[in-house]
Image 1 (tube, one colour):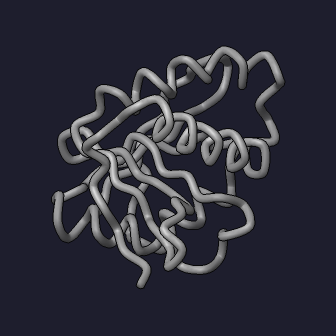
Image 2 (image 1 turned 90 degrees about the vertical axis):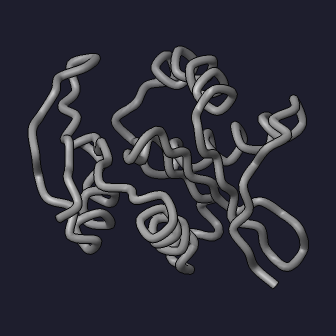
Length: 144
């Protein structure tokens, strides 16, 4: 049965699997990132996964991770789903769990990722402010 499970043992094998999900998802949805951007972000993503307070995976019936979410305080810091599993409710399940269980209220979304903007707007996350990082606008959204 599909489930959302906290990732407590953040060993190399686990982090590699999640990094693979991150990279596949980013290549599918973050078309504005260059190869250099992805290379530069890779070690930061690993570091983030190692140290974030709450790291949760969506596990399917075959014990495979299909997506994950990282929460720090009451903010979604990362949410990635394997492209082949997108549109099947995995991201929604992870966000719903985070809102209901971890009192998530905020998320950052890159304004150049309209797919993500639309996804979070469904959850009544509203535009809060814009920060420009790497010459790209990052929208700060608040759940009301």
